[in-house]
Image: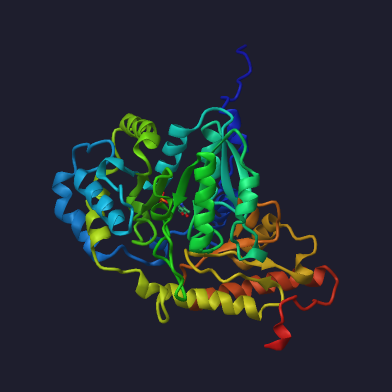
Length: 424
Ligand SMILES: Cc1ncc(COP(=O)(O)O)c(C=O)c1O
């Protein structure tokens, strides 16, 4: 008789990692779909899945150069693409933007992992927003670091509090992560706030890791403030790419630009280059679209202003939340998501995961529970703003129905929300 078979052990710290956006609920969604159920899936900010296409001039740029895409490129990326990225950031006011300090990756995702691998020693701490985009927490943990969260609460318009950030700095802190405009909340950080956070990084000798992948997805006149020009000599790694602003997630093109005083960043720059070399290079065809993207016409603003698809869907979400007894929303100023809170009687004993499952099984809508974004509360959920406005109105009718059932089950008359709806 052979010995009983033991399951293959995996990395222990994986038990600390979650990515619910594509997790258990998404798996259950696929099961339901296999059974013939039609679901409206709002869990992933994937423009192509909602009928968006990458701009034509980007598609053409890849097609024109397809014959040149067979070889590996330099580990940091195609020189012409890095030059275009550096010039783009120089125009934005980053004085030391240089192609040698640009790293092109298979999406921002790969570069987040790579940069934390380059930075962290076991036990080092990274200051992360709560809520966060959960890859930041996962990559910190899997690179032997420890996430330390600073809160971005709804009652402060989801903005961080610099006093709290500084209070969380310890002798092990290595970096502050900023996600601006923010996923999942849609917050857009004002200049004065960024300046205060930069000052904390300077004082405590921390690296700023700045995820600006939604930098041009802005609503209602919101003004985006890039961090690096304000950081100057303070070391800063700015991330962006083609996935969102240019609606080309599937091409897997992201980049990071390192800025800051040479004597401070050169060892880190070398580490990024080395780790980039170990994975040879990023997907090559997509890199040929970079120059066209950063030098080409603006194709996102029209979508984010009145009459534009994202703007109108966002408006539908805001109106639906205002009309609902059960929902409260800080209107997103940027990015592709809304992060409403459940309030009133429906919120009694509310569990966001439970609700997301119930909503999918009974109303055919898939959302992401708020707790997937590393928050200590369980009364929020996230939807992407990518469907058409009419589809979104239907979604929120379903959400409201599910919440009304909960309110009724809570056995109470639905109290009016704190916000002054009665005044409307
Ligand atoms: C804040 C944030 N950062 C990074 C990513 C990953 O982007 P990429 O497609 O470039 O890997 C996402 C994707 O949704 C995101 O929301």
